Image (cartoon, rainbow, N blue to C red; front, side, top):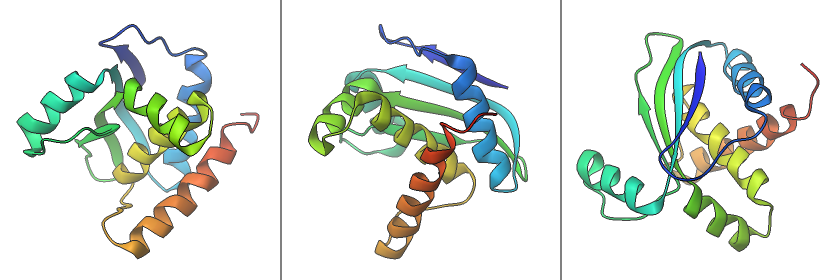
Length: 139
């Protein structure tokens, strides 16, 4: 089950479309859907989580908590809509496009992809681009 919550004033439109898309990403990587919660928040909220749980005193757009059980994907995924908005401007893309990229980025981490090295980053970007195209496919 995929659910969406907000700790700020953001509301995700077309939730069922996002649920189907995220589920298809998970299935396309040979995993199954468990309980996944997307929590939208602001920079301060995410910064506090980053400090408290990861000992990082930096702003970020996403923090993914991995509760996977084998190939079943379970997670709380926190996304700063402020960071997404700023990054969208920096990358000259729409807010919706950047939000989708961040949302699939978190799921890809849960499916075993990393982005620490240049090689891992390149594969992650390739996978993000592949999964972004799936958003528009009729389910």
